[in-house]
Image 1 (cartoon, rainbow, N blue to C red):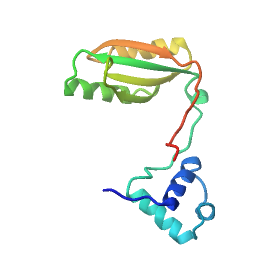
Image 2: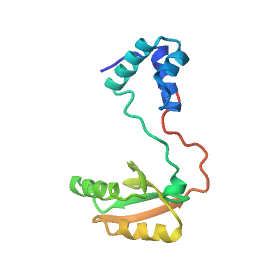
Image 3: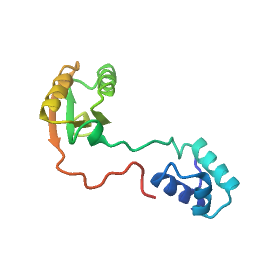
Image 4: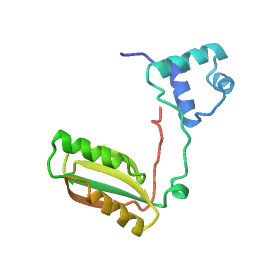
Length: 153
């Protein structure tokens, strides 16, 4: 379904992308519409899937650890059962912040967060025991330059 987003819709999305906890009244004031049309637009944007939910940004460092690593994983074979099994297993690992199936050299790239190298070694041990994992390569992030939770519109 294709839908045209006008300047009010885009303003709603930009504002909610910055502050998902903004009051409906303040949102309406900020975009320049009254409350009722603003709420109708938000509901339509939710229904049409432009707004997929609201969440809090948690402090990874305080909760999980200060080290981010990008882990490239190659599987023995790219058959559906092996891919699905790997995806199910990594989804259960709390250190895995994101997982992408890739084109190119590796089958998957994971972004993981750990406390320290010992914690990473423990995670690596769990990853190597997943059936079908053939190769793992890791790179550690030195600093975060850009980090967004939603696209800039």
